[in-house]
Image (cartoon, rainbow, N blue to C red):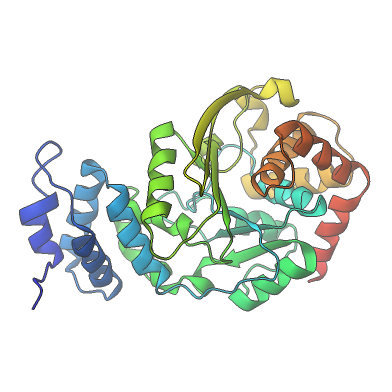
Length: 348
């Protein structure tokens, strides 16, 4: 009979001794911990201590993969016929700058690269605006079943998956996470659910080491079998490229891992982060989305959307360079294709 590792024992004997002396969990220990968390087994005090100990210890990719696989065992997957680029931005959202991913995803879809985005609704700890709230402002249906989301992808090229519908096990942790007051490893793991079963993941990072850890997590996962992971330094941790000097990480299933730097000004984003700040994230993001797609803007908002769309087109393998992706994105805006996709989404 195998040993049991309740969270209190893991705290005492493995992860809870401090930032310097804490040990890493085995895959089996991490998997058991996540099972117990989903089963509402630990005392709330123990759970909070466990989450905090893992925050100061820093989880290994092996631990994150175990957490991810336990989560994915509880995810309701709905795979569209299309193979989209999976965009799992930070679910707790943005509070200062516009969310560009809806506009960028719609433009990429119009250019022939299907895109899936997913988020919850006011996820702890920030509980700020995310994909759902921009789509709500645009009158696009968001509280969909996973199968409806898959049909949305195949009908329009763009799809939204709603966390409480496809990942209820994580959604049920809302109250406990809200009481923590700080982010936990759940904030990382939930973005890796990949509810559409996509072969490409697009994400963001603050530091390049985190991008490598995400790649290693996907490689160690027994659930996921990705062809490509591409990540960049995002604004507010979101999957929106920040203006200026930006690092990019690009991994392929053949084991190739490249990181490189770009100057976004060379691709049209010749402005500062402050130029993307807004007063009302959801409402202003929706307004700029509609104006860019309708061709009513030729300023920095259009440039930012086009470059973010180019990354999605490039990630999906439909352009062999960012320059080619940028050309495709601009064409999709200029010929009205992107506006037509948004109209289709509003009618879905």
